[in-house]
Figure (cartoon, helix red, strand yellow):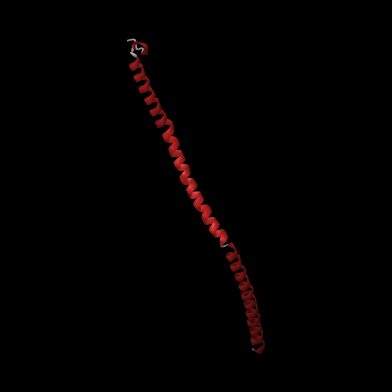
Length: 103
């Protein structure tokens, strides 16, 4: 069985060339293009998620001065409560000392 393109007429040779070309393009698309497109789609979804995280971080960054002011206020209240508790402990200790001296 001797297969040769030269034995075919010119339109048969062109037809064989077209068929082989279509098969080659199909193989290229199936083995190279489809996985590349899937990889690109995966990277695009990852990029979209990262962009959403960036937007969320920027929104938090805009609130940072408010958070700092809140922290300063809470620290001030903590100092006030610390002084109040210290004074209360001193007063309680004085009452205990006085109660012991009277008994």
